[in-house]
Image (cartoon, rainbow, N blue to C red):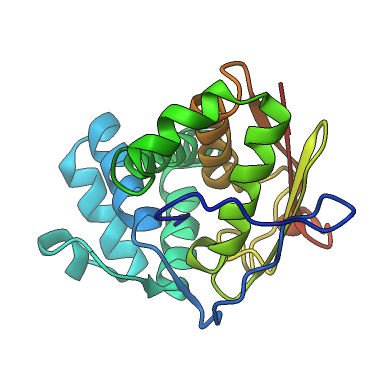
Length: 216
């Protein structure tokens, strides 16, 4: 999920970063599984993680955590099982913690140190556009077969149509805290320390897409 680097890519006149050019084959980076497993184990113990992975049909990842892109269906099942096993409120907390862990992993292992140093020193609006260009260019690694769109501004607006986290789910409230927390942590470390990301629409609630806003 998200880039190995942060290339400065040109934007269109409406400040919309370029859309991804890589093929979307319904696969997602392994952080959506491994970091959620870590969040569950940290709060409820390894046995709870085992039960969750068994319920989602991904018990094979207990012995050998995924290191490559995974089928997005596995991620959908895992997050659905999370909501069933823990209830929507606790599931949101765990999903959000998994998102924060994902961002920390990306910052430590996927974003080059020079960019981690440079972006926070730029004006927030410029740093935001550079980050959005990189995220958009690699959106296939976290949106899978879904469609990701981003628009710079105040607030930043991010949209995932066909979101794999809440696919086939029904809810009165947003379910995709994993994405919101990942966006928020990246923005706090790379753009502005007081950035806040919130989900404003969710396909599970009947909206046409899952939408997020980032403000600072």
